[in-house]
Length: 80
Ligand code: FES
Image (cartoon, rainbow, N blue to C red; front, side, top):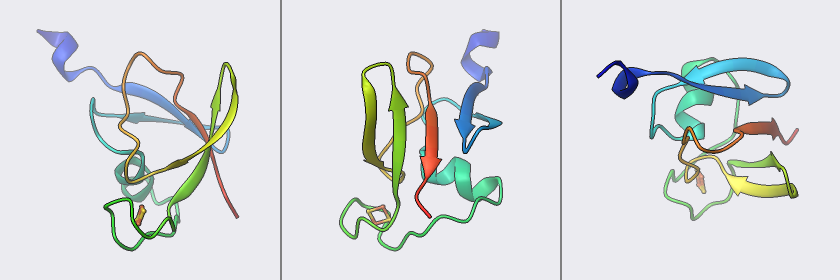
C-alpha cells in the first residue's frame, strides 16, 4: 500500500529531487523551480529537450514526454 505513494528519486543537474510515480520530467522541473523552456507540452515544439544520462550513454529526451518511472536511473541535465 505504501509503495503506491513512494517518491522516486530524480537527479537534475546533479541535484536530488523526488517525483511522484508517472509524473513527467517537465512537471518535476517546474514544480521545483527549475527553469526549462517549454511551449506545447505535447512533444511538438522540442523546446523542452534535456539530456538523459543512461547506463548506455547520453541521449536527448523531451521533458514533457519523459515519464518518471522507478525502474530507470532518472539522471538528467538541462540544456543551457
Ligand atoms: S514542451 Fe513542446 S515538446 Fe515539450
